[in-house]
Image 1 (cartoon, rainbow, N blue to C red):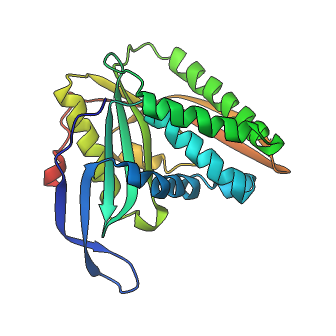
Image 2: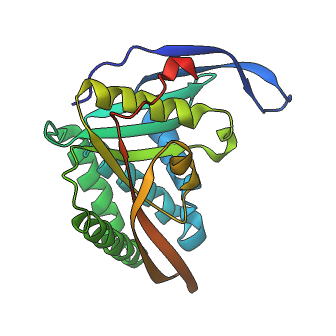
Length: 239
């Protein structure tokens, strides 16, 4: 279970809203239950779920995916801008992980709702295929990883403002405190995977797959990246 995170307020933070360069506040803090709906919307937009399924199924899929990730973490941090959750990062100390029952139950109920429709079952089949690809990528690595970035999502409207970097560095701080040497994550061409390279992560494995969804042919590449936490990574407060 995630330890309590001391909220960090970043002042003089600039975002681009209705007025350019308007001053606003960004806080990194513990995840709250009230955040989940907003973060489901962030996930839905980040991975363009509405592109390959109906809006109704896209909402169910985002709920199921977030719940699955929350069941697979020991550290959860939310980015809030002017009271609105706009990003989340989840990390896992693999040796200490115990599945939080409240999130497992949320995951089960969300999956059951998806299974109730043919469209939902079809899209779950795609994600089952992706999970198999991820496991294959990990099995091809020779390292015995102790840490994982279980989820990293940021509202597209708030990218390029340094929020993602602050979230990432806070997670690396956690991994250092847990004395975890190597951390890995899964990503693919539907994500801004270049961000991870800018943070010093290295691509270790990749795999290409063609999917057919909603009458569309989609070619995707899947990657496994990792980083040695012992290398010099700047503290979140210094960026």
